[in-house]
Amino acid sequence: MKKTLVIAFALALCAGFASAQITNTSTPALAITDDSCATGGYVTDDIVFTEAGTITDVNVRVAITHTWRGDLQFFVDYSVGGGPVNLVAPAGHDGSLDNYYATFDSEAALPCSDATLCGTGGSGCDVAPGPTCQPDGTLSAFNTLASPGTWTISVCDDAGSDTGTLQEWAVTLDGPGLPVELMSFQVN
Image (cartoon, rainbow, N blue to C red; front, side):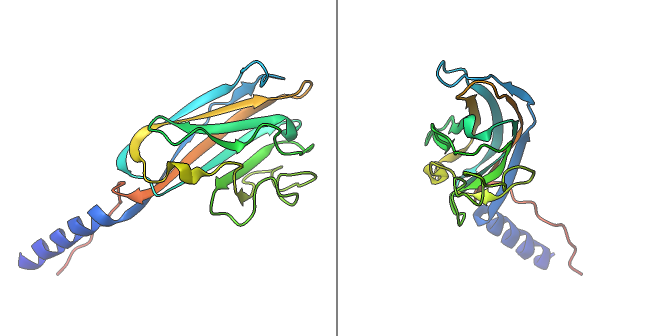
């Protein structure tokens, strides 16, 4: 009995300080209106986190099919503050290739606009899952904020003749206080 109480107390204490990673995903399959940036015609979608904790890192993954990815502009915002943060800023990435598959991580080695990734002639973003690369803005603007909250992605197309779809996107949060899944075990 004594060993069980000590182990249970130690696990409870560690769980309070442990850092966890939680990912929530949305698959909206929303059409991106052609030539919509100038009129503010953003397509938006929300991901709600109900888990409580302090955010220490945020990554955003996108799966966008589009016939000219250089037309795309998109940003993410958080209901608690810190944003909006440009993932692909106005003037976008000068990419004439199709689609935008990427995971945006402010700690990544290269920016997504790098020519070897999603920039001019870069074919890294053409197919899923795409590269992990830096957004145009910094996702660390959300660090130290509290969860729960609602994340919103906004996407538009800034030129005519090409269209696409926001197929899927995900937000991954790291931080202490977020739920940690503990493995059950028995001590004999």
